[in-house]
Amino acid sequence: MIDEEKEHKKSKVEDAEEVKAVFEVFSKEIPALIKGIIGSVFSEEAGRDMGRAAGAFYKELKESGMPDEIAVKMTENYISVFTSLGDIMTKFGKGEKDSSEIEKEIERRIKKKLAEKGLTEEE
Image (cartoon, rainbow, N blue to C red; front, side):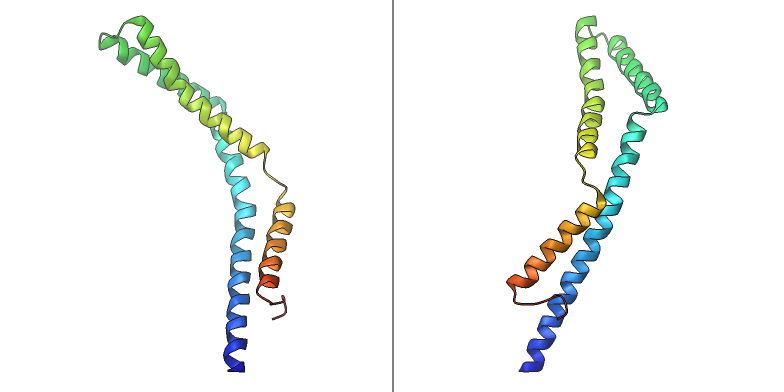
């Protein structure tokens, strides 16, 4: 019975360590991914591509017989999708914590969960 309890506690600690490792990867990889996406959304090339796409969109609307006023409004909405996405990502990127702060927070939460279950890090 005692061996089963020790094995159960050991399993919980291993699970907690695995979760901690996953969060450490997230805390390092996600900020880099967001920065890369923001860079691609706001690059000079992305701006040119968006301009070409908006122009092609507007041209297709006009060629299909859409009135100017509606074609312009639809093109503005089309562009706003891209700029809104960029705004959201920028805000998220600016709100990110320093990765060491994230790691400390993860560690704190894991220790709290272990303490709630009556375990220590050494167990």
